[in-house]
Length: 341
Image 1 (tube, rainbow, N blue to C red):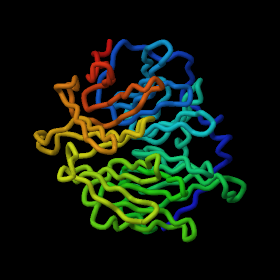
Image 2: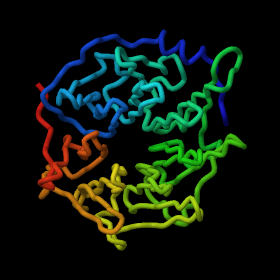
Image 3: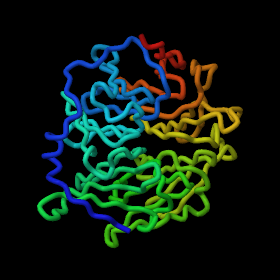
Image 4: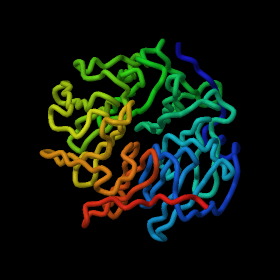
């Protein structure tokens, strides 16, 4: 069932519901905890979400700033980061969504139905509406174009509205405007704006385990990461799905995250599996060859959960136990993880 909730203008919320204000965060010399998400913003700075708050990396100063709940985050467990078209940074946490406008954190969900709900993913669509994928409560959409009783509306989608599962891990809007939702039940749903419902994508048998990440590459193909069953590629021109596993040369079938760099290389992270003995590490696909990076290449932790490229072309990898930066000349990763003071 779709539920409609009203609220005052989203712009009013952004200026009224302020968590805490600050000008300078806590600068730390090192990093720790599991890193789950990352972002390269429009200014070239990097953001890394962890189980202990968020770390901002200033590329000009080459230092990190650590932000936690005491600085205004709605929770220290950060699992999603995006930048909106206005340059604000949004954080999905275990207790709702906060926005950082460059000066202070603003809790936009504190007085709404999404408050205290674990957010796994955030998406801003082409109409500047915001979608929140949750861990067990389906999807919420801030509909900025719909005016209900003088305020903007929030639409709540669940399995009753066509989702394959209410536990949503990731979301993507492709170049054609299709909104894809990856679910923990091993299913993928696609939004149909005409009916305002979701339909389940069959995937030609490609989806069988938790969908961890969705990516659209430069050619328009949409890739889906299966936690224990490799990759699925959707060809937008033909509508066909193709399944890739270690039988096709992949480094691992356990795929946790996806990233395409500026050169068009596809990177995907993996973990060591339920037993901790199924490999793990990072894999790079240049269109022809798969190259694997593990402990022998400087990754002291091989459970990879997020990948991002810096403005200098460096690849950063967030793992279950720290943060690493790829040093291209040596072909090795440099460990940026140190114990916090």
